[in-house]
Length: 244
Image (spheres, rainbow, N blue to C red):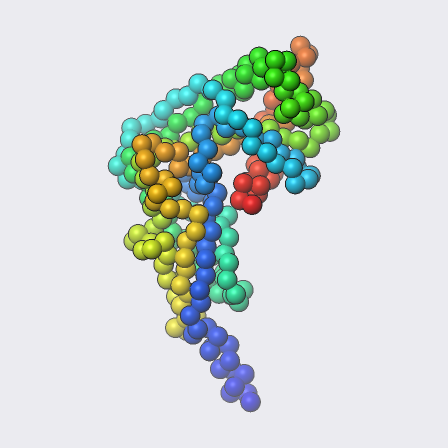
């Protein structure tokens, strides 16, 4: 019986595991994967305390392109992905570490585009439209501007545009959207990647990665809407909504 107990966990580690890794909206060295294919200036409204979340519209903001186009770049240090599969904790931890350390997203002909004076542009747009379009009610800005409101406004303020994006693992293209991970004693996991397809991110300067600002709305002394830039906790809440 003692020999059996020693061998049983070993047998578990030799089985082939079938796993899916969902990389929707993962965080990388280039920003968040733009799984919703949103544009610079896209606005969202969400609640820090409830499940309320809505996408508003894209507003015009001045923009600047940084650097030259480089034929190939890589986004690495992938985090925030979901692993689905009937896995032991040790196996899941091994796969998570392997993906984080050895997976990347290759982008072709990429350039970073960022908004310029984004708060000024946001303020100008909203205060210029607030009465004509009743934004205080329609976009809940009156409620959001209350001192203790948990509503937040968010914006895509920067993008990394490219002509193509491809998932890679261990310096090789993930054939068929997947790869294999070895673990334990002759154990192997067949990992399928979801949340990125070449068709989705192929075209002329598609926004592959994005960065967000999150704001607390308030009213200034002139009675206009104004915007206070918030921190990591609010951004994490936004990303949670986008991943769901």
